[in-house]
Length: 240
Image (cartoon, rainbow, N blue to C red; front, side, top):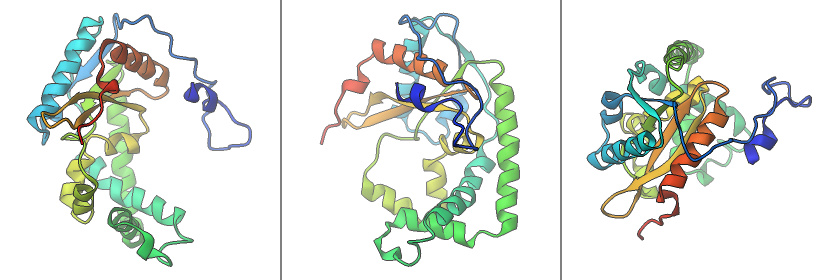
């Protein structure tokens, strides 16, 4: 409902897309003929066993709904992941220029670290990251010609604690692992829909994402609605 309202051309926003507003996601509970890609090698790279099991279980659900599961090879995402920090950091640094560093003490460690990355990045660092961004965007767009959506984890593990997130704030390598499945699509602009798709033995939720081609948000919503009608993970509550 929200996406159908905010999408489409806005004459007061020169940065908006020129495509018409997206229709509501029509669905019949099935996903017949939907081509669902999965790169099991990429999905398993650094992911724990419970996350991998949840993704495989979700693929079985999609197959039962009529989707065609196809093995694919995701383009190398390492440069896109590494480029996320200087690009996002620069954007955040500009957005927070009125309050950072003037009120830096009110910022948490994760956001402070990202802003500092942006403030310290050189123009050449930024341009190299942009070139890597464009290369990945083109390579991934080519992959999406052959499938309707890609299934991947949101993170390599289940939802973590705030303390654990703060602990990786200043660790570039740990942070790269944490955003390894999401940063590439932040940079490429491909729409992604995150859904709960399982839980650990401790009761913490596991996230899955559907990634689609540019402008395919309605299809992602259709797939997400069908998946949630066939499962109950979105109704589960984490165990305290």
